[in-house]
Image (cartoon, rainbow, N blue to C red; front, side):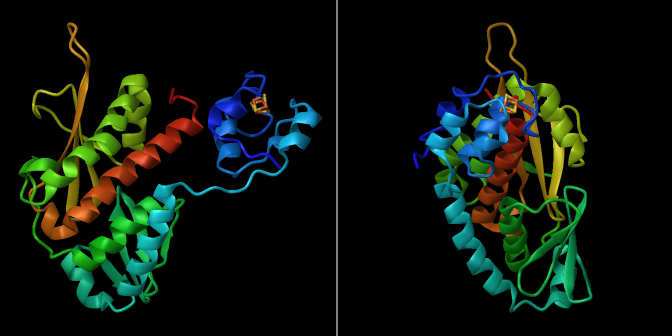
Length: 269
Ligand code: SF4
């Protein structure tokens, strides 16, 4: 059976009425789900049966990013199995009970068992698992000191910054540019705390992705011919509590999740 090369190949086949009969909010969201192998073309009742037969079952595909996540996860889970949870709880700002460590991730409870599996009332994405396990393993318990720094000024951040800007700040800026309301909604959902007077930004929000690792998002709206801008800042203690790899995984993971949510709502162009 033929496999699609990209999302637009699928989108072109649809009638673009966004009728929702496939249980997706838009035809674009449906195309994305089919491309990833999460849905089959036959779920759209308006598609010609001949087209459905031509393409048949679409295999579940893994991006390079997802494949890398799986490898990293396997390693981190094996390391977490050797951690003494009652000692770790105090160090990382978590609670140890019933064989699990429980900590707040953007206002929501996440528990980890001694095999590195995560439990939460909300859907657990790999993006959140990697930073949480890294945090349990690496957090030194350094107090948050309130000094915000861009990634490139943190120890080891200079080498990572170019990729971080491409994979994290740029897509997040695009998201804020195209749908500021959604961006604010997403932050609200995850317990964002608006703050003022940070680098003269128009929107400044503090997220608390991990108990000792806050993150500041600053957004400047376009004005007088000047393009918009968006920067992320971390507390100066972040390298002690998460390490540079963990900070990078956290930032890119959050953006990856926001993008997926936006795509599901049909707002990413
Ligand atoms: S069923 Fe889904 S994919 Fe098909 S036309 Fe309606 S919204 Fe678009």
